[in-house]
Image (cartoon, rainbow, N blue to C red; front, top):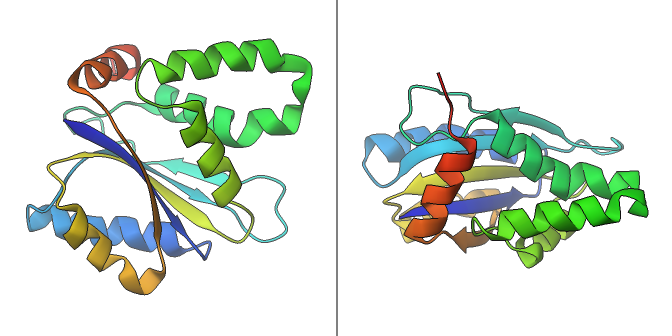
Length: 163
């Protein structure tokens, strides 16, 4: 079963450093990174910068469509205002079908703010205590939603990289 986790860091560079640490944890077989994206929100910036892992060789990678939709719901649609409220509701409803709830989106939106960063991670076989231990010095906060096998299948079907 895959887990979608969001690790929030108190600095704009924290998420990138954490992604580098995850590579070592993967070598130790403490986690299998299926896909990831980093959000960096510099102080004074109106919106965050996002960067996807883009590793099409990884089994289970979701691709830019998923990350773009998720980041749009979390960070960019609130900027556009209520004029697109009905469409936003429909998008959030479709994300709930794949295990990403309205409360998850709201929590991330409230916690990832200017001056912080976040690591969005789709993983499996994670030893969460060991992963959290690696991030302890970085003052990371874990926001997590677990995906059922059915939700994981729907997510892969909807957003998998197609040749």
